[in-house]
Length: 356
Ligand code: 13P
Image (cartoon, rainbow, N blue to C red; front, side):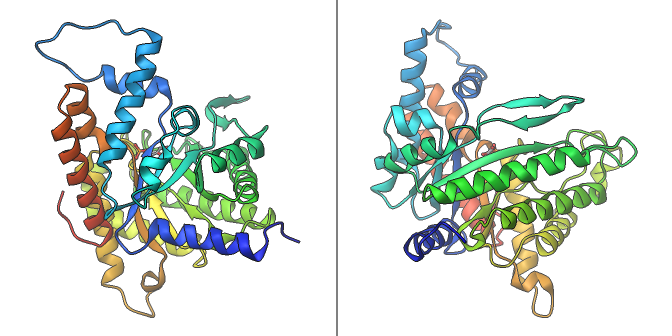
């Protein structure tokens, strides 16, 4: 009833395992769209140099150069895989830089967001049309996994987001994506990004995470996805920025909330959970990851936390933010140093050690 042969299944499982093991190794997310990368470059203050007006072609070349610098600097002892934007993988052809040092290249599969008619603060994620062909091309260019991000609004219960319609839509989209990805021979990373910009408290965020993730695995099962050859990339459950009592929560509270969500909603057949950083500062993101792993490391059977999948990172901003600033200023050596530093901090955090 499934389309993968034992050979493909074996490859999917081996790749998924390699992305999150040995414990500590994780994923570096570099799949920002050209517009987003541009905004990151523009956000860096460069002193003693004139503001330059870049042409379109120069901006393209700049993106390519930044990615090359970053990929050359990726330390393979800490980073197992890198998520690439299609332009970087297909047009720039940069996967070999990673593959040659044993880092697994992956590709962003989702397109852009569109408001859901009738619920304009919730979004459909486009990109399912023609996906199989695009992912087959990505595999031919060296990708071995792919990622799809959906956003999920999260308010207090009274304010009513996310809607059930949106949760079902996001889960169904991720289920279809995961099945198509495996059909193309790529490990799917399903990414439910539950927002923390609103007024939800921590318990509400836990409730929304648990519901969203459970629905996603229901739909993955419905589409015959090989769970052993898949990875989930969720957000940390967090109190919203508009929740008045948010400061009372400590890293230990976030850790308990996170382990609870994973224990309840992620099947143990899934080899790993790779968290996104979602705009948290590097110190906070790595602090939460360290705290949840410390909790897991100190748990023994029969605690459900003693048998969770690997909990690691798939950070973008928290891992490369400092390095990118130095690169824009032309400091190649510091760029390398900072990517190495933060990769190591992420790796230590995924082993339960706080060092950020
Ligand atoms: P952040 O860690 O910056 O949230 O990026 C991860 C990612 O891939 C978002 O889709």
